[in-house]
Image (cartoon, rainbow, N blue to C red; front, side, top):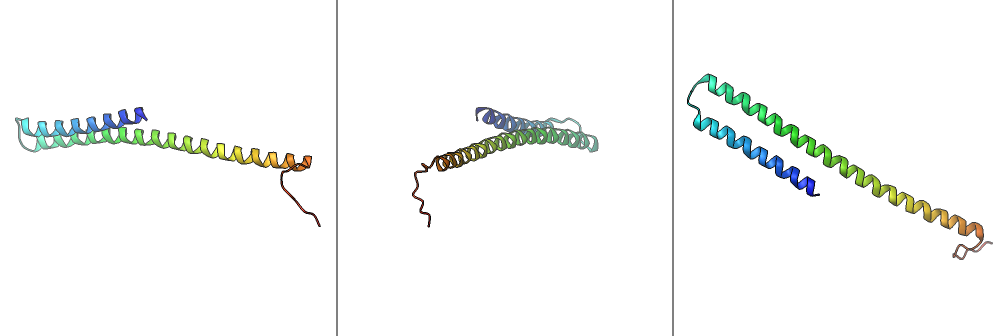
Length: 104
């Protein structure tokens, strides 16, 4: 859980850094015109790709953790069910099921 918070903080920090960098570049760029706009566009697209890749990695890691946890819980439930059924079967074979069965 702590690692997830750190990852989220990293992504937010990276995103804010990208936005701040783009804004600073626009405000401080000495040259104007087509060339500057093209460079800004390329830089922005590269940084957006970087942020997107990082977010996707975090989401994939969280999905794997969630799937693992759900799988473990399902395994525990199945194991518990199997053990109860096995105990009931043994008790029934021993004639001491704890239940009152009436045969006609």
